[in-house]
Image (cartoon, rainbow, N blue to C red; front, side, top):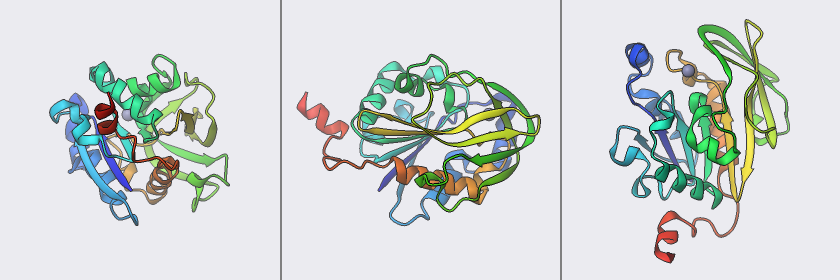
Length: 239
Ligand code: ZN
């Protein structure tokens, strides 16, 4: 299974130094490190600062699943790249959106709301991630709930359509609650949004979080028989 990890990696201003202290290889490096240890996962990486925003057909055209982390430059991604991503998901590529990718253009395109706005505060509160669907593939191997010691708090109202499957909710110390693990199906594609992982907290080193993301990649991987025939290259050749 070919997994491509993309992180925005554009200047984070006040957070840059703190992020580099916690994630010396960037968020993308931390994600790729645990994903590449999974059986059968072949992992590649690109960043928003790479040519073509790291999202060119040459870079991501062969991915079975794209893992996508972004922070604040959501609107800088050109529409053309977003349209291509949307087409790839509708054709069956899995998409796992992490943390601030809730506000990404690609999430808007796929779920139909404008900004997927939510409430937020960055004070490093303790978070409890609660599983609402223990039979789901993404909940496999996880307890009924687990604690993340520090993360940004996100809360409702979260402007998304009701997810096709809601696997987790997260409740912060200040009792904000969020639909934090949401599955959507669009065309042949599967999309999972998971809210944990602010860049100044070491969330992606936590075993339970890694399990959620690895499970989500397996769940989102293309299931239909004609994949990987419908790659972006094929669409281009057909055109
Ligand atoms: Zn954040």
